[in-house]
Length: 344
Image 1 (tube, rainbow, N blue to C red):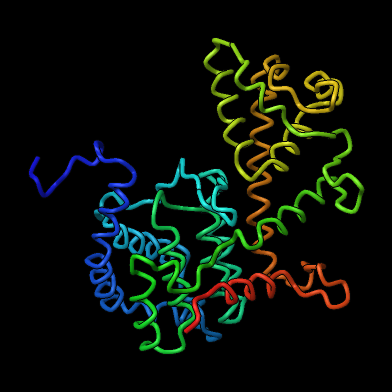
Image 2: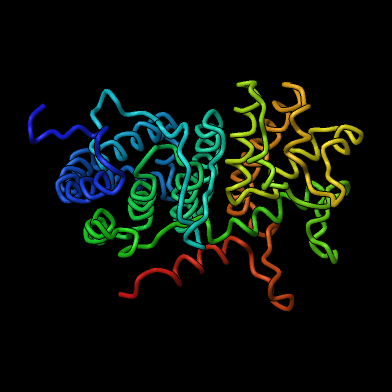
């Protein structure tokens, strides 16, 4: 192996990140040339216009465009370009230390297609936020989702080719997230989660907002260290449960457990204080574990579908923080993105 081609497996995350940043200017130039060559601005202008041209653009064309866009931004060879975000987790979040888990990988393309079809019926500005938001939320790729969503936002939102070219160079830079609007779905995740869980029985107006019928507490996470099962399938289930419980999806996994188990079985996994006991969950069957995780990923799917519907039917999704003049969650989301954007 030559000195110019390091062994990536031996590099730390910090070294890989530094290498990625060092290569971004070169990749940015390649991507600019690529977008010019395929007339990407014209493609997205047709997609985002109110004219009939957008009806001639298929989802397969859009999907192929995204693959090439992300592949060039990341420096991925043509034959290796795919939706490769099977095990990706999003770190950072609004609090800086959150872990956000995207929907199940097998659901991602379906959700992207739903957003693509919905965008065809939206005005230009709304589509320029919805499609990038869903790209960011589902995390199709193991890396470069933020860059891909920002580039799509610029392509769909730029009024002129010149304006797009100027903003694109900012988006592709090392500090692209800081130099352009960041379509960060974390700005609205809490509101969507509240909508979804309310449909599943949560009463956020109650004195105890965590109450979900038979669900009174959280998961006794301290018990994870006490698990001593040697069964590989059980260890795998608990590893997945702990990963979800350590993410920002606590309400979703609690709901998934409560809805997967009949009352008697659910009562058998509770501690005296109402907390769910991982130690007692060791007695669950393989089918019950499967139902829990299926329920959880069903809620994650519902989360993104709600995000799409916020743009399709904004009048049905209101932010009621201001009871006198409630605004739609769509307008709230776009307003928060613009407020967080760098000042020109």
